Length: 207
Image (cartoon, rainbow, N blue to C red; front, top):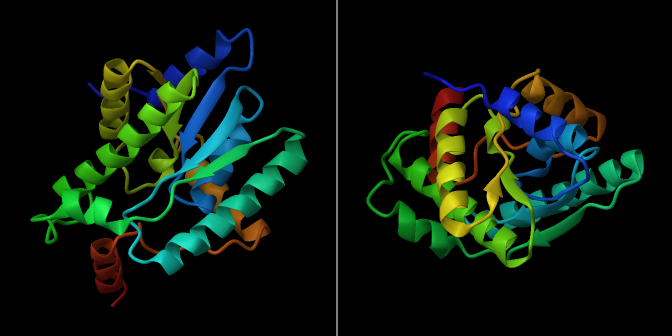
């Protein structure tokens, strides 16, 4: 049976008696817009920008710039401090786990490994730095399976020793809202997930 992880997140928020520290793994600025808008009232937030899957350093740098724009906007709008940790680009980290799975379709085994790589890094960083929770923006995408992401995040959190904030950010029109805010801020919004393999697939869809 599918779990409504948006409801599960709301249950956690309703029980809060303080603003816990939350580390959010972000895949890009546009996807983080609606996530930050929704959570900034309830948590002390830092962004972890760890995305070795991106197909070039140029793409990585463009997304970091847009992420910082989003953070500045949300800080100003909400009078809240939001930190960012941008882990230096190292595409080999992704290529190593994607080896042999280059022909997988988006959402297949290669993507599962990529989710795991990024969530594991977020969980380990959250544990080492004393955060109360960690989560990811990935579930805001209509192409990302929130059931898979949450099960993976919860299991990693239990193993590492830090709580995973269950979430499904595409709920409550989250994706639509992220597009609206991105347009308001004139953000660069990429048309592929990030790796060279997803880029090829996106180009094929547009033909």
